[in-house]
Amino acid sequence: MFQKILVANRGEIALRVIAACKELGIQTVAVHSEADREALHVQAADESVCIGPAASSGSYLNITSLVAAAEITGADAVHPGYGFLAENARFAEILEEVGLTWIGPSPDAIRRMGDKAVARDTMKRVGVPTVPGSPGPLDSVEDGLAIADRIGYPVLLKAVAGGGGRGMRVAANGKELAAAFELATSEAERAFGNGSVYLEKYLSEPRHIEFQVFGDQHGRVVHLGERECSLQRRHQKVLEESPSPAMTRALRAAMGNAAVAAARAVDYVGAGTVEFLLEDGKFYFMEMNTRIQVEHPVTEMVTGFDLVKEQIRAAAGEPLSFPGVVGKGGGSEFQPRGHAIEFRINAEDPVTFAPSPGTITTFHPPGGPGVRVDTAAYQGWKIPPYYDSLIAKLVVHGRDREEALARGKRALELFVIEGVKTTIPLHLRLIGAKDVREGNTSTKWLERWLKESKD
Ligand code: MV4
Image 1 (cartoon, rainbow, N blue to C red):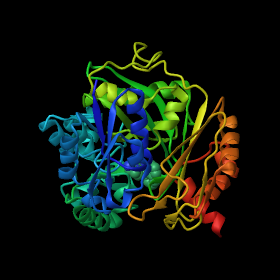
Image 2: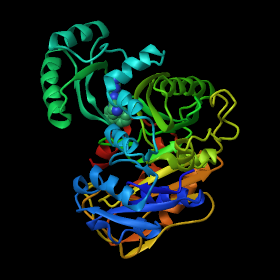
Image 3: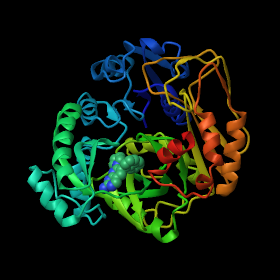
Image 4: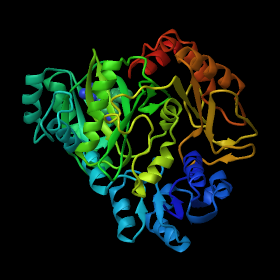
């Protein structure tokens, strides 16, 4: 096992990784920017290193500084958290080159999933369902028009180097497709330095359901069930839950098998997420995220497992240790225990979503049965304007969905944050919405509801 881990991240994620290290008896090194000197993750770690200026390009994304910090402090492994460099294959490679262990999947697995056209092709080869579309990147507009004529409109153009919703264009007919092709190509070129795009049939109102997968260095891959992540605004998730209200045992078995096959196809080691679109009872591979995710706590709540500890063990070469899952056929028998919901609490105006940085003057998180709060905020903390606006994740667990919703409501009501605006009022309104209470949502639902409730 490792002696000392450098945590290449900040805020609540750095604290989450430090918590796992502490339980495993591993020393921790925090890194921080000049804007994060007073941050809680710096206090929580055994050592800390300032790695650069406030802007993340000079600090949390600065590979040279991070490697130097790891070498100076004598760390033997690096945990990237999520965001920042978590899916940077080159960073993983450099760490391995200088003799540090990267706590994550191989650079090869990251690259094969990072190129969305390669990932799609890999899935087709191993029998994981994909949305009908082009066999690879489009060579020309004519190439796209021919395929769209075959599969039918509307179609969606996606950047090969994209993901998470960046660089997508819908086209309802051939004329629109010609224009969309030029726009998508130039946008992708500017955003990713790679103008390649591919084409898929556009699903009009799918759900976003993702599966937590885990692999070890001994060839085992399992899944730990799904998370329903349909409630999103501008590709930012707002609320996640497990299990999905749309799930049945049979569908979970089919999607779980597909998720495990997806991970196996790239010899996946560590924690990963396979994202699917579900529409009219049919599911399709969307992409795979080769990191632990923001919303991993809902899976921890319904499994009772510590996913970050398991990532560290897997990177150290230990076999998977999930009781009741490993050895029972790759998680095919997996059953969630109760129901968990995560509310992302951002320092944002709950109506306009404008960022609301500033000093937190009062901070009192809720507790009690079935309540978990992941946060690095405290009374007197000045939220810097340089990073994302997540200030706390409220995660509730109940014996069933009804209890989880009731717990979520009371915990949101008892969560006191003053000094900055937060999205707590939005969450309370959401919990009161009939469709949310009935689990009757899709990827289109939230933006439509926000628009309707404004008119
Ligand atoms: C789609 C789609 C409909 N049809 N693909 C958005 C994120 C990126 N990973 C892929 N996304 C989508 N792909 C086809 N063929 C709709 C979306 C989509 C979406 C997906 C998940 C969650 C929220 C979304 C919001 C808008 C569009």
